[in-house]
Image 1 (cartoon, rainbow, N blue to C red):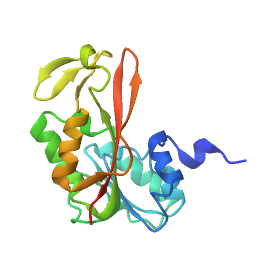
Image 2 (tube, rainbow, N blue to C red):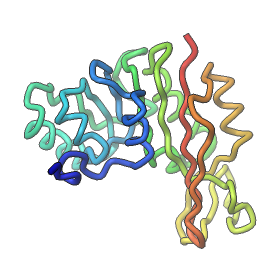
Image 3 (cartoon, rainbow, N blue to C red):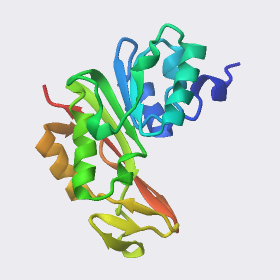
Image 4 (cartoon, one colour):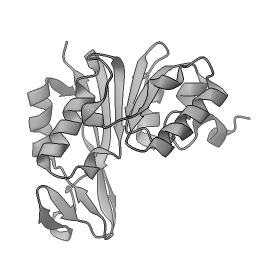
Length: 203
């Protein structure tokens, strides 16, 4: 019997869905923008995927490097770097898949959000998949309080930069991205709303 927790770690269920449907395949180079300690990468490391990522936390990068050394010792540790997404040092068109899971909503304002998005998007090869999960106003418009610069106070007491469907559609069009999946939004009642945004970069 497979030990699910050991094999997949804390992978986001919507990212797991992309794996199940074959959008993330062996041979793909994958970049995790805001990788943290590698919770979404356990299975990919175990299966020998070509991985890289950045995080602003040096402690998180130390943790993901330790994880990689344990389960994928051939992967160079410098593939994981303590850098800002918007200023990362990886080259353009580096990856077949870019993951930005629960990170873009930490933007300080609209300009910062767009810079983070651009920093992640420029790494994506034509035809590649961009996967993002981020906080949204969808379904909780009357429950959030605007703080200015695109940030809102959520019902759970946290502050996040929030998007909505028209904004995501405009950003996709501006970057040459087309929806690989319909937008999917999960409501955590009395707390927050999270939208899954999956694009394919036009060739």
